[in-house]
Image 1 (cartoon, one colour):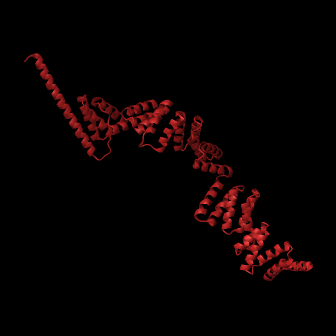
Image 2 (cartoon, rainbow, N blue to C red; image 1 turned 120 degrees about the vertical axis):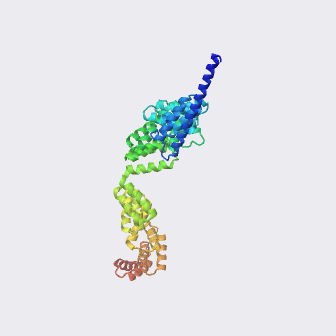
Length: 454
């Protein structure tokens, strides 16, 4: 046999032997991985079975460096034990050998974890390299797009940060992301990376309950984009958390100016103004009073409104509710006091004046005074004497023994010079209440004046 042929034959034998050896090592690695999986423990490179599987898979890979099968097995094992740095490289090796994209889920997990680690180490450029590699293979990966935007934003490349965020927002269903993450993407896209970056830092500080830092970041976000409504909303929210109610009012006013239809911002503005004007205790007791009024009624709510009014004695809204619930609870003397305080502060409040008269009437005539009598009395106090007389007459027709109604009829008629009619009314009142010297006096005086006229 010629020498050249002999050498070729020997080479062929060696290659076949190497292939057989590589196939055997690959089979052994697969069997070791299967055995490791069968063990009901969390996969880890520190566990003996997984350590053996990794060693055998690496040996198979070394024995056949052009084998896509060996490369894939090694990548799968690294992914299963969460050895992300090695899994990432192994999947890229397999992609190069096979001409296919890396397995989507395990490769994305490795890239995301490695990028997150670089961000944590203060290396946003390094993180972006991992995210960019992921997006080359999976251009619509929601979390990859989000994290790429964050990494570029943190590296200071504002225009580059907007591009992945824009692509993210174009996805029809970006699964796996929270509303706050999508909100950040919108903010950066709409208001720029500087505003978005500060807003993101504000949210991070808020989550850490570092409210002074959060307020500074939200304020900086708004300064970067004066149309950034959510920056003003979060600044207002944070100022409330800090108890800085004056600043909270400022921010909520900005939020309402930017979005006048936002009822939530309008409510928070009113709440902040109350706190700034009247203090925490008064506002808290007032709110509790409103809750109790809705659930348990006026009697339960009154002590809370009373406490609110005492804590803020010039807060007319608290005074009104104290008067209202005192009146509805039947505490008429207290109601007189509260309604009088309202009128002291707002003399033109006709509603308060009406309720004050009503409370005084109840105080003077007691719970037994009928509604018709009180309506007639209210007309009398308003100087509507015609309506008052008709009302008192209706009361006496229904209750001929109602002394006070006869007394007021006498007073109306006496003032109008109708002395004979006045005497009749006063006489009936005096007969019903013999100890009332006023009724007796005016009955005689009416008779005298009526006789003098005749």
